[in-house]
Every structure is written in structure tokens, then in C-alpha cells.
Length: 211
Image (cartoon, rainbow, N blue to C red):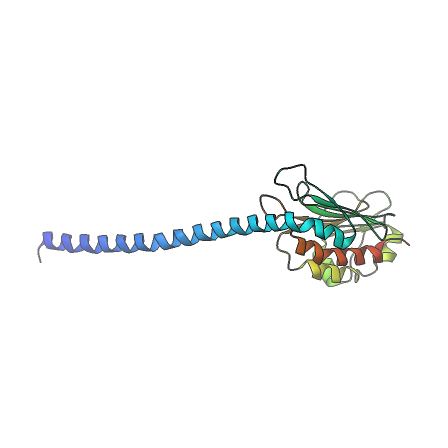
């Protein structure tokens, strides 16, 4: 075979390789597009479901439903259970907040916080391994340390949160217990998640709050 024939064979092989790459790239692109589209549809379906479910959810827990000020908003839940003030705000703060009637003298953060502790607080080490791994920062007053102990009361609460991938932050402060979520845009917190975490949240609050 001469030089011209060799070049023609190489050209045909190159064209076939390009064709295969083109055929392979198209399905991969479609897979990515389909995955993105499916994610958008799921978020929209979750948002629509939350808007429909929240009024009944409020009645279920004895809370008040507050319509959203946004045309496409979910609305929120407010009220008190066993003396604890509860706010479920999926539209703006994207969080569930339980406020203490009396601060427990306990501050726990998921992230490490190297700032100086508030007056009267000191760092402690939680002996419960799951609680210690979950909260990187643990500060208490002397009375708060007695209430918290090894941190065993935190473990059932942490287990309840383990499978919630959209949970972005958890903190326990003198203001209350805060759970922050991110289910994408438009913002919402599914009713099933609220049902899932509220009992555990209240149980933890009862165990930590001064009597």
C-alpha cells in the first residue's frame, strides 16, 4: 500500500473514532440533562406538596399556620408546645427554631468556633462519641454541664437527623435549638421532615431545659 492509501486508511479510522465519540457524548449529555431536569421536577413537586400540607400540619401539632407574604411561598407554622416556642419558617430562614422558656446554659455548634466563650461558659468534652463527633464546639455553664452530662440525651436526636441530606446546620444556643435546611429553590421544608424531627426536638428540649 502506498503513502496515499495509508493516509486514507488512517483518515477512515480517525473518522470512525470521532463518530464513536460523538455517539458516546450524546447519551452522556442526555443523562446529565435528564438528571438535572428530574431534580428540578422533584423540588417543584416537593414545594407544591409543602404548600398543600402545611395547614393540616399546623392542626396536627396544635400550631398556627401563617400564610406566606410571597405569592409562591409555603407559609410558616408558629405556636407553643409544652412551653417551648416553635417557629417553622421554610420561606425566608429555611429553618425550624425551638426557643427556651429558660436558657439551659448550653451552647453546641456543628462547626468549630474558636471565639472566646461567652461569660460564664467554658469548653467541655462530650463523652458520648456520637454527640462529640456531631458537635465540634461544646460550651456550658456549670449548671449546663450537669444537665448535659456525657451528652447521651443528644444521641437519639442526632440519629433522627442522620438521614436528612438537606440539613445544613444544627445549633443549640441560649436562644434555642435551630435546624437549617436547603431543599433548593423555591425554598421549602417538606411536611414529612417536620413530622419526623419535631417529636425528637421536643424530647431533647425537655431533657435539657431547666425545670
